[in-house]
Amino acid sequence: MRDRLLDAVERILVRDGVEAVRLDAVAREAGVSKGGLLHHFPSKQALVQGVVERLADRFEAALPEPGCPPGAFALAWLDASIPAESPTGDRSGVDQVPLALLAAAGGPEVLACLRERYAHWQRRLASDGLDPAVADLVRMAVDGWWAARLLDLGVPHDAAHTDLRALLTDLIRTRGGAA
Image (cartoon, rainbow, N blue to C red; front, side):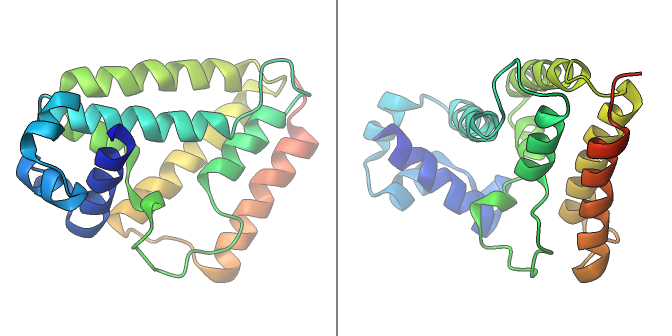
């Protein structure tokens, strides 16, 4: 039931945005009573936090365990964040749920949860055996790509997207050795 409710929240987020996430709308989308929803998620904030945690868990599942070869974590971070092929502009997928924006919209407690996860990921990037500047550049490139896509600010498409992705991959593989 919990996943069914979170799936409904994600569909609403993608289709209608954060402001459309209301308890009655989620219950209707999931095909459950409002009481059934409240049994699992007592508030809109709890729903949003549930989605943030689930999206962060999905992201983390794509990342390698500690002890992987140098650069493996940064490559996985890149692979899990920026698709290999240029997005076609189809904004119907769940991958369009902007995690950071969603966390911010959930309030300080939800944002604190994401900040804690992000700090962990940043420590993993920093200890990936890469030159620290390369690790930071990869993280910032990923963050910038998502911000540009979210706000539709000069998002690279087609060859520009592919070239950017290849450049970051090459940087990790060839210049990523620890300083």
